[in-house]
Structure formats: C-alpha cells, structure tokens
Length: 434
Length: 70
Image: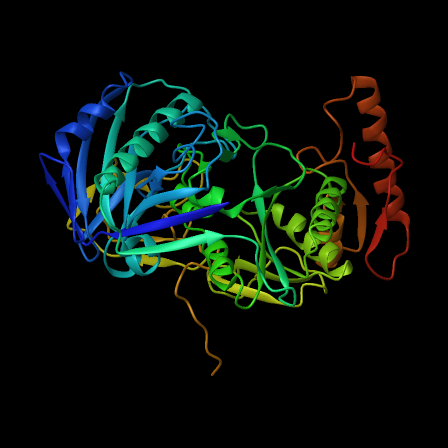
C-alpha cells in the first residue's frame, strides 16, 4: 500500500465568492459553504469566521478540528464510513491543505447529565498564554459555527456536527485537485533492510463502551470492548479515525490529531533509515476489571510478538484507570523481549508535586514525558469571542458558575483548551536539567 | 481498602487490600440475580472484616472467593 501525500501549504484564508488556491492563498466561497451545510435541516444557522495566529480572539464551543484533505487517486475517499461507503483507503494520492484547520463549533446542551458521557466543548486562544498551551493556535483556521435544532440526542448532534465539518474540510481541499503540489511525501511500509530493528506503534485507545458514542470511531463505527488489532498507518492518513464530536476535551484527540499522528509520522520518516516500521497495533484500553486489563495487555504483546517486533513505541489517549492497561502492556512486551518506550503526558497536580503517573511498573524503564496537563494557566482578556458561548464555566466541577468568556480568567487545568494536553508528543516542549 | 485495581492500592501502600469485582461496581455485580449478588456482596464484606482482624507487616491482598473477571 503506497500513499502519496501532496502538500499545499496555506498562508492566508480569504472569504470570497469562489473556491481557489494559489501559492498559499486560499479563497473560499463563503455562501456555498454555508448553503451546503444548511442542506441538513437540523442545522438552523451556519456562519464562518477566519482566524490567524496572533489574533486576540478566543474560540468557544469547539467540537472538533479537521485538516482539509481529499483523495485524487486511488480507491475510496477521505473519511470513509462517514462521508462515503466503507472502502479501502490509504493508497494512491491524497491532497492536504497544511498549516490550517477547520474548527467546528456548536452550542449543545445534551441529554446526558452526569458521568463521562456529558457533552463538553473546548476553547482555543490564538494569542498569548493560551496560544502557548496549544499547537492548534499556530494554524490558520476556518471556524465553522453551527446552531442546531434544540433537543437533539447526543448521537444525532454528533453525526450532524461531524458531517458538516468533514464535508467543509473536503470541499476546501478540492480546490487543489488539479494543481501541482509543492511537496509530495510517500508513505509505504516494507522493503527495509533485514538488519534494521522492527518497530511497532502500540496505540492505546480508551473508549467508553456504555456511552452513546464510545469516543473513538474507525470508519465511523464507535470502537467498544475489543481485542487488539492491526491497523495500516496509511489508513490514519486518509481519515479512518474520528472522534465523538459532542465531547471535545483536551485529553481526547480530535480528528486532526488522528490525521497527523506525530508518532506514526515520526516512525514512518525513519522507516528504511533507522528502523523497519511494522505498523500500528490499536489496543482498546480501560477494561473494568484487573483481569480484563491483564488480558488486553497479554493479547497486545502476543500480537506484537507474532508480528516480529523488536521494539514498540507505546502511547495512549484519555485519562484515569486506562493507564493501568498501558503499564501492563509495557510489562507484557518487555517480558517477551520487546523493548518499549512509553510516550505520555504527566499529571503532577497544580503545583507539580503530586504523583506524575497513576501506576508504575519497573519494566517501564524508558518514558518520554510530554509535559503536565494539570498546571494552572491564566488566560488574558480577549478582544473578540468567536463561537457560540459568550459565557463559559472555567471550573470543571458540576454546577460551577458561568463567567464571561472574554476573560481574563484562570483555568485549573489544561483540559478545556483544545490541544492543551499533549498525548502524542506533538508539542515543542523540551526540558533541561539545571 | 476494597479495590478492583488492587495493584494500584499496593503501590500507594494500602495495608489491607481486598480484591473487588470491577471499577464501576467494586462490591457487587449488577448482572447477577439479587440472590447471587447478595452472596457475592457478603463474601466481599466478610473478607474485608477478616482482613481488618489480620496482623499485616506490609501491603497484603485478600482475595474473596469470587469468579475471576466477574
């Protein structure tokens, strides 16, 4: 499976009356986008905003972030199972608009009132301290704001928001369909020298089985309790993974993250040079019993052994007890002679003195930290609010009071900032001992 | 301490740890009939009471007689 990813960098986004891309300048037909979105009758209103790094704006009500892509050659189409049929993807040529994203926002109250299934939305600052906390602030953004019919169920609202975002993103990428790319990167497994170490990416994947949507879907199908499975990395690049669009929290990856998985891309770029990249094991984590956690750890390590792995990068997503599954997986791999490196964020508490991880194993001897998600952060006053919410809850406990979204205010953790938790090491943090 | 994540309880140094059923329902199992669930609950609580009477020198796990993976 060979995929050519053609890159069209975006330096400016200009609303206009036609779709056009030339040398980094993207012009969008504002009316056509809004009209297409409004074909879904349960969207009452849709309007667009454009944001750029450095703008003193705060976006509220973010439900997902998507990179515009379209397939111009090869089978299937981007976001299979959501926008089109379940067809093989990952081959041929895909165009991407890099350096930009579609941010979809929507006000949504939901019907679930307690627990992990409660709707959540995220914010993003394009300037200042809030921008430093999220790499998404470095992208140019087309903000697609939606107002939904009241009273929709979680799954219906999710499907409507996601479809609007994916269709808009694909439409933007179509502006490049007949153009020549500035850069083409080829992604293909295999053909590596026999003496290179065989390396896997083990992607722990927390899903909430009992919720209306489990949190992560593959070809549009929410992943629930499942044994570990092998995924071709090219599938990630064509958008087979997506998220629950009525629950955007910083420790769950958005669609953009799945399309641009930094560890997957990093391993791919070392393929046939320093390593033989074998592909990805997707491991569902967050089993309810210790027995379940031991079984999934065994199953994953057994699969890795069968694939002939010498080493694995292990990463995860989400929070809480799912991390026990991850640690047990590391132990199971190491006991079978597969060397592991864990990539994870830390807790550590607001002052950085609490335990950084929930659970440890002596076999986890190589860990790359991507920084703390717990630290306080002070956000400055915004000049403008974009998105549905003029007032937000800045504290996370139930019944917390509403505050003006304009700020300034202090957040007690990074959870509310989209991109505020670095689950896969995409950020630019570094550390020096002194 | 009654915990479904008993290795975590050991790691934080709890002295007497009783293995529980599952994270969402540590002291019982809603999928069982009321009668069987009652037996299970009694077994866990009795194990916890025995644990309280026991002299322990370090983190000690007490296992109620329940089916694995219940």
